Image 1 (tube, helix red, strand yellow):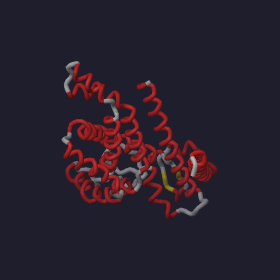
Image 2 (cartoon, one colour):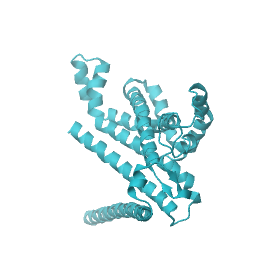
Image 3 (cartoon, rainbow, N blue to C red):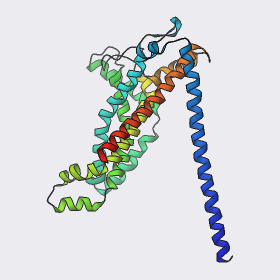
Image 4 (spheres, one colour):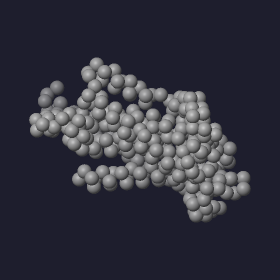
Length: 294
């Protein structure tokens, strides 16, 4: 095979691979759009029987009486997500700093695979541990009645998002050019001053990405939350009272609702709200990140 023919084959190969990637991206976009369209079309049918004000601003959920107030589920999802991030993000960032800049090589080689292994643990296992250990602990030591509620759900979610925060934050810290660290140390800064004032600001976009993905994981989690939050359609008045989230309510009621009924359509609307909340959270945090690090 001469050089010209080989070059033509390489160009043809590149062209077909490019077409394959474009087709895959287009197919992915079509599938996502079709899912959103189906959920939105089905969910918006709820407003034929239920007013938007009742659905979004009341917390009375009793389909047998025709009451479809989803405020408790929306607030429960938001509260559980933010509490989980408040607890898990600092711990995960501390773990990332330790693995990236402090831990000896042997410990790092052991801890990084162990951290990645947490991702493979099924969410139902976290939920079962929370149900058998965490909920009784809260019930006994906090005298919190049943022990189910936002506190148990947030602690479980905080543990579940740790691998995401640690892995991505560590990669972001490691990607900071070593010249910045060396320059800071050469100017007389201590290791902790260098980490706090040089490495973390430089790695902040990657750390912010880790927090965004952790929030998306937390707000979309179903089984673990459903097992420990109590699944009660009540406004979350404290950390120790049972409540419900969008995902837990959908999974509890999805098997009992006839397709096309107001009850079934309202569950599709809950799913649409969940998609919208996730999208808004990501957009808001990215805009904050652009303003801060532009």
